[in-house]
Length: 251
Image (cartoon, rainbow, N blue to C red; front, side):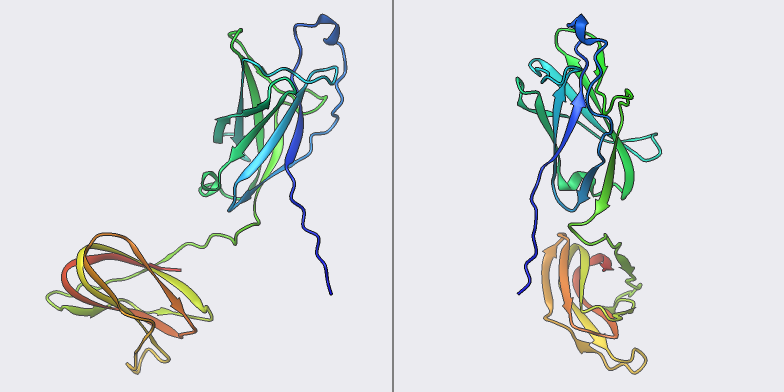
């Protein structure tokens, strides 16, 4: 029998916030030499915990403090995401940022960077947070596909001009070796039915129904049909009573 170990862990990063109130600490060297790379996994929520210490390696009190997290694009010219950290323990100097799944959907995988900026309610200035002892105020963070598969764009299916015909067919597409596809349809006050059909040879006209027929009544709600099985060629039969099917897409 094989056993596989699986780890559930929080990403934690130690960050330096200079203590300007204590003149004895200005010349003190702080401990982190290198900032480890962080990772953001697309397809799930990501929580990163930060532990803020001063030059003497003591926790920085985060009371009356706002710390802003910025996710910066690889080219350094665009802020991909920005939000304030949630304080976990002000006296222990810990706070976290939660990057929700949907906030990474429109961001491509890349080797990006991040920064942290502090604002005290008692001061009008902003302070950078440092990642290492070289006064680096920008850390490395990698956005990767891992939890879910890589996103695949949908392919548009053509709906031909059909005049007064109440029964008509979409353009054909190849099913290839995919055993599960999803068809998206966008109706406009449509009443009628749509039926996915398959064929072994698209030139012989021997089409068969795939799955059950989808009956629709006066609907403008986007819907989905899962297509199971291997079908060399596919199309959609549309029987229209009123309204229309605005678009079809498959992936």
